[in-house]
Image (cartoon, rainbow, N blue to C red; front, side):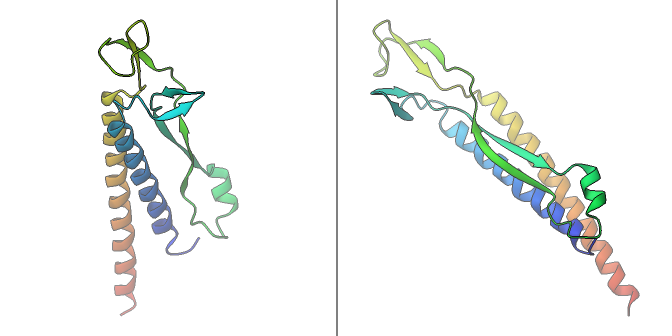
Length: 145
């Protein structure tokens, strides 16, 4: 384990939390988008995106403790939420079908706000951990004077 590995772990978590906030902001921005993708001549509504994150198991950390330990947590990918679109009755909407229903995106603003709040709190916790690591390194440098 190197002296800066804790900073690398915190840095990877900061990057992941920022990605989560970006994806949630994109979902909110497209909450009313009914023409996101053209499939077989039919417009499909926007599908909610989610970040899939992955961390290394603790046993892996122990085994690799003497090697490099700068991985922390990573984003495995961004996937579509497969929840079906909701049908809303709005016969005046330009994308309504012959029965007057419109397919709306599967984005719930409240759920996105919870994701943003969670990502913000995780981001703040990792900033605190990063500052603690920095403080410990600064104290270690003072010992050497």
